[in-house]
Image 1: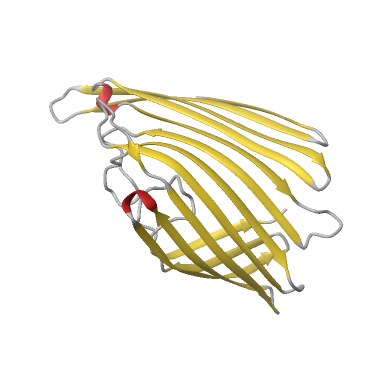
Image 2 (image 1 turned 45 degrees about the vertical axis):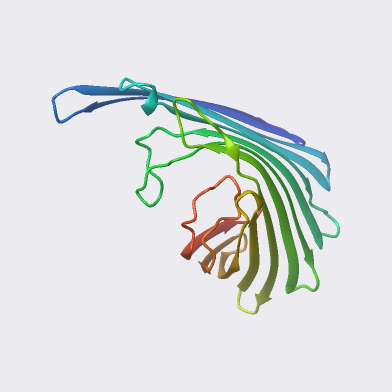
Length: 246
């Protein structure tokens, strides 16, 4: 069951949604397991002036299992961003963003590779993303992000250890005749607590299928994500991306 409500005017857009789910699963021994899950999602945007806007979201979920607390789960995600999007001259675009992420996966929760999610995570992530149009067809940009994070392998008696990280991304985009675009990124992920550094490239090609919609195919030569709340190193390979431009 779910309910959603939203409000929008010239300068303010706000929405909130509440969802409830109840699951009953029959086991091989004939018994039943019950799980109840609550999720609340909130989004907002405030146009301070035509060139500046504040954006944010707050999501929180709790999931309780009749099998015991080891099978419970939940997460909290709070994001606050400040964006510079010029109206009259949009050559320079800037987004500064702060994210708080707290994740408690159940022991039977599986990731994208079918492997159990191991870590309890508490992270504060600050990021600055910029792009600049050198010409009408060529733009350059970059991103710097820092994670002040902690993780724990023990759910019952959490013992957190530091998991900080620096991410640097350098990017160039080129628009070609025929509604094509090319993207090349160089990425470096520095993990000071483990004295580890990972680096590599990402390439992608996009085709505009409409004036405001493009679809892309790319390959990530690194095994990490540019989202520092994602602790998995399973991102190497091909990907498909669909982007809507407003």
